[in-house]
Image (cartoon, rainbow, N blue to C red; front, side, top):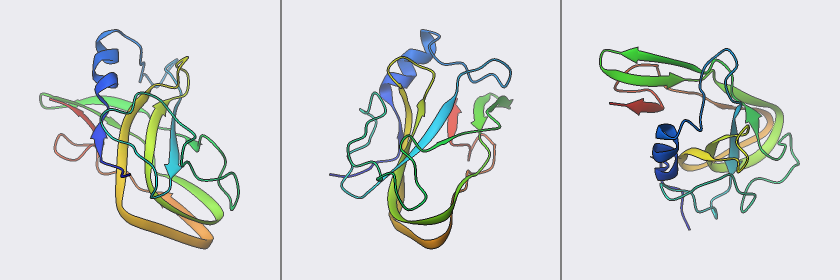
Length: 144
């Protein structure tokens, strides 16, 4: 079992079927859920799953956090999407990766899986997922 960072294949098709709306006004709600090292998340992940998601304890709640500042823009010829960093306060848990998914979609359709590169642990502190700069070569979601 492993988490592999990737834009989900189902998401690529669903964009063309207009199933995801990243607009800041009237768009869908996107969440970021955290997973442990036993999770299997990759380009083939089609929807949010509770399998190996962190337990609702230690400052974490099932389905994770809603993402804010969903701002699709163009950087030259590349469409990009940025999110504000998201945090869990008074947290005590270990996460290996996450899944961004469309919480407004009937099936909680997946967007992308992200591997943290190793277990990340917080004990009675703040756990923050920091998103990279919103640019063509660094944004978490890029369509070239």
